[in-house]
Image (cartoon, rainbow, N blue to C red; front, top):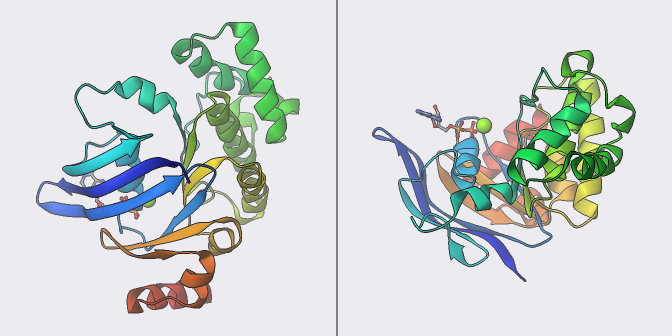
Amino acid sequence: MEKIIEVQHLSKSFGNHEVLRDIDFSVNKGEVVSIIGSSGSGKSTLLRCINLLEKPSSGQIIYKGENILDDKHDTRAYRTKLGMVFQQFNLFNNHDVLGNCIVGQMKVLKRSKEEAEKVAMKYLKVVGMDKYINAKPKQLSGGQKQRVAIARALSMEPDVMLFDEPTSALDPEMVGEVLKVMKELAESGLTMLVVTHEMGFAREVSDRVVFMDKGVIVEEGTPEQIFNNPTQERTREFLKRTLKI
Ligand SMILES: Nc1ncnc2c1ncn2[C@@H]1O[C@H](COP(=O)(O)OP(=O)(O)O)[C@@H](O)[C@H]1O
Ligand SMILES: [Mg+2]
């Protein structure tokens, strides 16, 4: 199995608040890894460290065998290899749907407008938003916005997609359409690291589930292990609380 991202002994503090402590895990090519855990456990900070929106206080992040925290490493090139989808969509409101999906390709990947549009259309079809290319974000529902955000990230043709609670800001009736797209992407072999509150998704779609609590990985395993046979009391507590709601 080819490791794409390997996090070793990663810690992160804000002032003297240690938010992540000695995190070790990896993501293999083609794998879907879900990160679950209560709010405040450090899940977003971990994703933000992986894509270098935050600088880890210590530890290593190895991407395809290279230490990306090394000063000599090309951070910009690395970041283009990661697609990021946020809870709050973060679309450019002044651009239409197609515009949102081509600006990064043109600016960062230096693709021509024609090429960028071709690639964007391919991924807008994948998420079922190709009929909306001229719509502005404010004309779209939350579920549609999130699908455009996914298409925009895919248009950069990243090696790994990182999702940070992509359905948490959505009205309940729109959660399904976004999860369906994510499930299709998972089945297509895309490498995905997904922070989620959707236990159904974590259980049914992931290859591996990582449970975090208070800045540490408490346990990780297959969905079967984590949901049916958790070994740690903290995992059992969390699942009991979460699955009851
Ligand atoms: N930029 C920051 N400055 C200070 N504290 C932060 C910052 N970002 C996150 N934190 C703190 O780190 C902890 C983990 O936050 P976060 O990674 O957002 O957790 P989660 O995504 O699991 O809800 C929280 O206590 C949060 O207040
Ligand atoms: Mg978070």
